[in-house]
Amino acid sequence: GCRMWTLAWLGMASLCLGAAWAVPAKERRKAEKPKADLALYENLDLDNYDLTLDNYGEILDLSNYEELYDYGDLAPKIEVGTLAPRPKDPETLPNLGATAETPKLQPPSTAGPLHPAPFPGQGLPSCLLCLCVGTSVYCDDANLEHIPRLPPDTTYLYARFNRIGAVRAGDFTGLKKLKRIDLSSNSISWADVDAFRLLPSLQELILPQNRLTALPELPHSIVRLDARLNRIPSTGLRPEAFRDLKQLQFLHLSDNQLDFIPAPLPESLRSLHLQNNNIQTMHEDTFCDSQDHSQIRRALEDIRLDGNPINLSLFPDAYFCLPRLPTGRF
Image 1 (tube, helix red, strand yellow):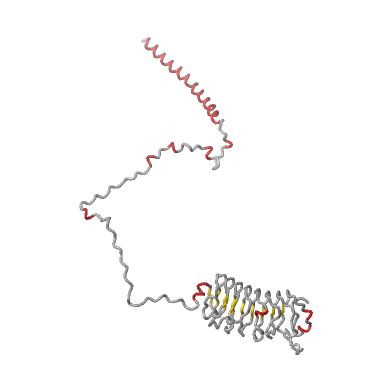
Image 2 (image 1 turned 90 degrees about the vertical axis):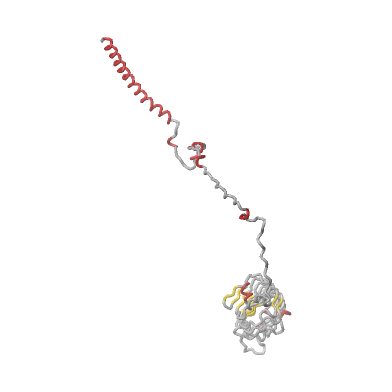
């Protein structure tokens, strides 16, 4: 009995001693762990830890990201369906060697001759090449080489900045309502004598910046003629070309090759531009009737002779009927 008691006492003593030693060891581990954790974070610069798109790749290593996950199981599996069984009867198979029958063309009908498509109505070609607005036709910068066929009711034609080289007699046939023709900045070197004469309503003929060497005959209805910047000499004007033009108000022939003033001039004239020619002299009756000193030409207020070699002071009696002196060298 004493031996059993002794063994029990020794067992209890061992347990107490083990518990006593275990508590200090546990406390020591708790005290040592913060030191280890602090040593682990000492190498991290937490103050400068700023994650941005610029340094994202430097802070996070994504090089082995794909190795962490196996995508092989996600690859789609394609199952090929079974083919349809081959029919037992060979006649049911299509004959791949046979080709479809080529359709035969039907012979043309003999009911009557085939007529060509009707030609577009008069005036349509110009409205395809140009812009037609009401009775005005705009053909500016259309790369034209000749006057297009115009609608019969055309009133105004603008065909500037083209390559038109000539004006033919039939270009304006039948255009009884045509009032204005503007062919500025083309390459017109000649115009038929009757190209404009038979236009009963023509009031404005605009022809500057061309290559004309002669003027065609003009209709009596003309009010404004502008043929500046051409190559017209005095021999390119018909004798007394403007005398019978009783409605002419603006005659602009500057920058040509004229040798004299194209007199006689109609009483209706208001503006005469002859600057930059080769005019050297004039008659005393060019503007005024030397036999009628009571004559007054109130309309003719704008005469330009500057840019010519003529000395206007040599003809003091040539201007008495004018409301103002011409512009030029005195």
